[in-house]
Figure (cartoon, helix red, strand yellow):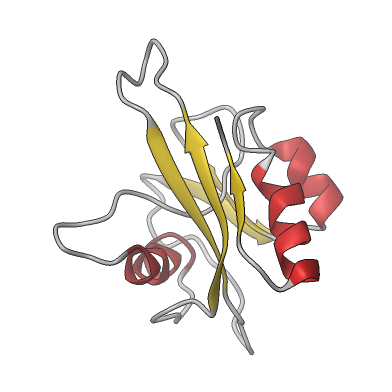
Length: 125
């Protein structure tokens, strides 16, 4: 599992970010992989997880996250934007789940289930 360590959070997270105006989510995921980890992915292979998160104190609106599978061949992740990301690395699934925030960690078992089932998994309220 590819994780990034942002300089502005105490925990690791999955690469990602906001979708730009009229940008499809899968293209945004590919763009973010390039911007955050230097990986040359235009469009990921397929959608694994749709994850809905409710609003909270520091985020007044609900959020939807898409988790995609991407085949990465002959590329090593690297820090591209040191002012935003201080580390990027592939880690085993079980270690990745422990490094993520409690809010993001449920996406990993869902992604594993999606890969096993060959389907997309929805997680949320």
